[in-house]
Length: 489
Image: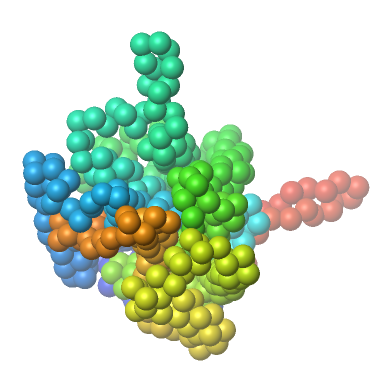
């Protein structure tokens, strides 16, 4: 069945999703191979943008389910605002609970998206192309979810201005020592940088989607505005390349510092169990470990929900799994260092926290430590790295373990301080659990909306791979030449 490839066809009716997949099936692409760059350029464009124009049944089910959970969480947040923080499980001296643990988890999850994207862009890794957009969007959406938790944790949302470093009447910043201010500054810097990085990478793809939209499609107007007049001229591509490279370097510089600031929420206190210099790198490594697992899980969901298995191929997920294996080994090393220093020093207040974790939360400790051990063992096998189902299960186990790790950093320390007179317990209420569940649904809902409004796959980077460039000597002069991979076949 012929697929329309002329530019004029892009302004008319698009081929159906089944027609796009049929052409790929006829090419008989091997399961372990990278994207077939010999496929017609028109097919690559239309198939990569298919999530915008075609809706699968899985997408409907996924979006409706996520929307219902978000609606329930919003209702309970409103109930918490009306009734006050008494509806939560927070009691003196437990002022940080599941909300702050969720905040740390989401900030950590956000870090790896742009870090992985920046590293792969700068190193020109060929297998990076289909996964960049999903990783960059994960950072932005995870940060948006994380930014909600300081607001939810405050209780009195109408006093949100305390989170910003505003001048007082004496031109002082009286709230500058508050971790709330540190967190908002860290999130603001990283969110602005990540949104800029995402948007710059989106520009060529937005222009492509604008040109492929049928004439009276509702997306045409906003895509025209967001494309900023992009026509794909040589000057525009040069400026785009420079901007992408500079932003990638900038992201790599600020990402570790931002998560280090979040670790200082704990390390700057003199509380036993928190006051340690290892918390900065410990949080950064944990964030990358959790984030890479998140990217793998999202890529597998993309393949399932949007039927993008001809673009996001096994080789991309397998390479990410190798990176995750390296991060799991580094993360286990940090576990070992943290434990061995506490055991050797054997300070009563710090050692008692370890004992209490095993006495009160043995099931959570087993999941947290066992999850990393299982991940290292499983990811060492090529058969597991080639199985999307097993990779999805393992990456979910990793992130469940990381969420528990964030929870166990907070709760045992606060419920078992150095003064036994203050020892107590903490159990999150149904309101807290519902709001946290709603944050996960909100994250996926943002992705679902994004996939319908903007290209969810980096088409420009995929098309970049179709061109082969090199220097050809003609007499005493070297001339830069370019060839299309499609023409080479």
